[in-house]
Length: 534
Image 1 (tube, rainbow, N blue to C red):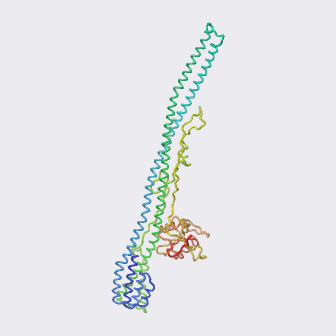
Image 2: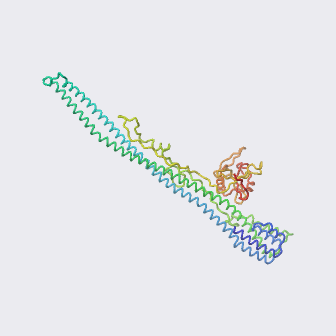
Image 3: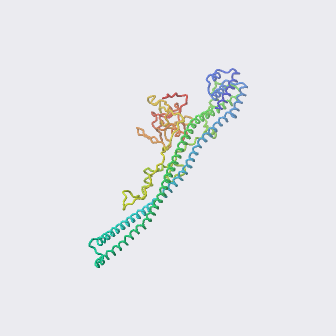
């Protein structure tokens, strides 16, 4: 970190100046212990008060004060502001994703409207097809009736013909007799009369045939139109379902990536924030000590009268300054971690997919819901066996299904390592839940969170957490059990906290939700554990 490099250079300069005046054992021990630069700088300032300092060192103290105020602290603040911008940039991704979801829902809404319009058109067309079907059936049944009349009348004519033939053709028949001719006249009149009836029946049949051809053509044309509507409807339904799948798949993938990136960054930056706050507080103490060195003009404090302790105690009051206070602190070191937005609610209905919501699954062709919604109430088509009283019509084409797509759903990106540890190793038997490396992205454990400074643990009273009743009847509100590492980080970050370290976990015993002997998620530095590979 740049501030640490600069402070190390300052420390080297300070120690060099102290070497010129033959530093005491206390100053030599600074190099041996190799403490962080800021802590070493404070120890050096304390040494100046205890042991006194030359004019050069006093002058150097002035220069150091100036550099701390003009360079070191601004550098710390700039780092903090840079991290805040980074956090805000990462968090802005959530709004981009929600906007993309809303834009996708607009497309879904339009496709649903198109599908519904085509559904209405298809059903209306099938009603017209049914009318054409009935027209064709009625025409065919009437044509059959006319044919049967023609056949019946022709059979009657044949019977008359047979009777006339029997009258004219026997051997004893004598056509020259008056009585024969008188008897023949009625038969011939009857024959001619029936022949006229037969011809009229045949003409009626012949005239009706073209009408039935028209009804056939009308039905075929209407069927083709309706079949095209069905094909279009099925295509619209598949496009609608595919768009829902695409929008939700994109949303779940993007939100998982953004959540993982944000959570992992927040965990790291919260640690850096705590370090900067400690550096800033220590630098305030160093400022105070160096100011006293300057004011005392290098004179050593009187250790016998307790002057050293008083001066140091006075300056170390700075350790208790609220860094986030606008009056005495430096609020720019206190970062804001916007919470991760909750999962959008379900859209109210398929025709109300607007804004930021999760579109409901849409029925697809050939499924049970689709068949019920689109085909169940269509006019029935005549079924076989077909006959003169049950003529057939064009059957509806078979339904064509959509390509099978995987069902979209929330996913978890394993971009940070997850570790678990016993919720309270000092309570009960040791090693009930030893530190483990969780490679399974679906691995789960309970949630405890720590404040950025690590002085406060939280195990309960989280928003949307569960209610837990202990065996003794005590109720714990807002508890989280069995969640993934990403979900645990989201819970903690939305509460303004972070995942605890193993050391901090020991201070969290008995803080609620009966977590003492459950596996709890903890944040582990990569050099703290060597996980065993399977």
